[in-house]
Image (tube, rainbow, N blue to C red; front, top):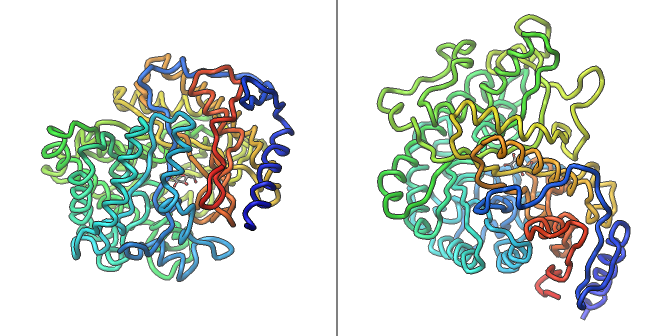
Length: 535
Ligand code: BGC
């Protein structure tokens, strides 16, 4: 019975908090909120092609919780968080958003928003707790079957990532990504996914952001297995100058082999598409000096093309070879054949832009002076002025035209191969100091997505073959080393009750997708869930 006062409080809170920037009116018995006019730019759903996949994204470790339920084994992140500690305040993903139990309600939320697609990842440890060394976990398969079936029932296209940072700890201990054995492990796991889910899943991503994962795990040591060396970080083991190249090579080959299998054995009957996702900053030269311009191009090669050149052209970028020489691995003749065109689409995770300064000719930081970094420094200010407005993450800024620029660069380099924006999102700054109602009234997030979508629409008008946009994220979730302090969601998640509360941005996205006038927001489609009840 204690729930009733809580429900009343939350309803009161939601309405009163919304009142700060929303003016409530009545329309046929539904609540209609007036959103204050935001500044230009504006954007409309109708500016995108009709079949365009608008969705939201998440990943298993960040939302599922249930870390040891129904036969799941411990993942690298479970062990990392429980041992050395993965984020401040000792928080971890043991419970996360409890999506494992609340997924049906979350699908309702997606449906209410009018999403056309949902991008989520599969927890390797949930369906193959011991990798190739053990059996398929039927309960894990059932869980993802239920998600896929219920999404489809609601008209929401499942867009599935096979690997998004988490995998069974047993495989980390037996091999890890420095070992080429991981390639076969990944192919084995991918085949289980194709076999069990491929009749209904038509969009596959083999690996999310290998560039970001490798940098954090093997260069900076901030992700498990925490390997690095000076001056990049202070780890007990590792070599930041070499290991990122080896681990990436294994990951790319794992991707290439899984793709080959899909293309040859599953795609002909299942008819889906397979792609790879990279973290894609827009790199801007710090000055208009030729050396900085070249350094910015090099930064693109060392980050974005490091992932896509091998999977489209079958070799590493020349810009990397020029500085890394034989430290950069080679693909054999056979490997080149299957690596080339191993993707049907390019997945772009784009959040921000950053300045680049050349280090071949001027003094830089200790890390900028290394070949593994491409002899360049990434900086966030020019003459003391930040590249854009701050967000909650110190290295992410609001730079909307970066979207059009990065899409155009990728379009040119890869001959306009189909692209999806697989992640784009805004985290509120200084969330710890903000009150909940300020977080729910997230006008900044609405402005962010409006501006980034307007920029994306420009690139499409200029001919870029972009086929979908996934907002990061459906709801606030576990943010890796930042724990729960960073909130990217359309839904606010109360950490105590796990209640999902629609933010202003949820209402905005729903209206945008319905191609309604953004002034008129129909709040009646939102359901507010309290613990296990829904009102
Ligand atoms: C990752 C997500 C992460 C997001 C925001 C992306 O690089 O794929 O897992 O939550 O950034 O930090």
